[in-house]
Image (cartoon, rainbow, N blue to C red; front, side, top):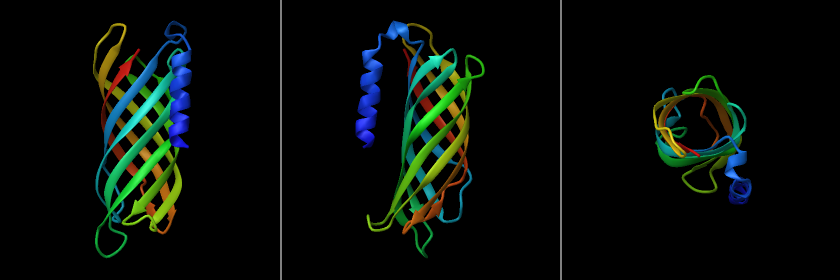
Length: 173
């Protein structure tokens, strides 16, 4: 389902002439969990986003994250993964500062597929472009701070709420 949605989003972006759109954004990031619950151990992963400008400074799109972590809800840490897929809306405050919100579904697998959990996720974020280039295709490095509210239920129930910092790179065209 996720791959079909992503493919349809890419097809829609490709079918509209680029001159008719203000911007298409592609972002890749590496998130770091700053604050976390005791049941969530070390975190590593990546995030991606594809956004289309709908008007001056407002962008809508899809985003996803894949993260590996140590599930410490049992007595010993078990290798686990979390997958996030959802929608993003962001508004440009200035040329280099954006604020926005992510609404998504989070799925976790701890140890085996039998130990899985799902839940809803909401992120509230601010994004700052640290370095950028100007031209037909713009590239940039960015830092993003977000507050995440996310809990999963099921066999791999966990709480992923807390502060997250992500360093990223992106392209606008």
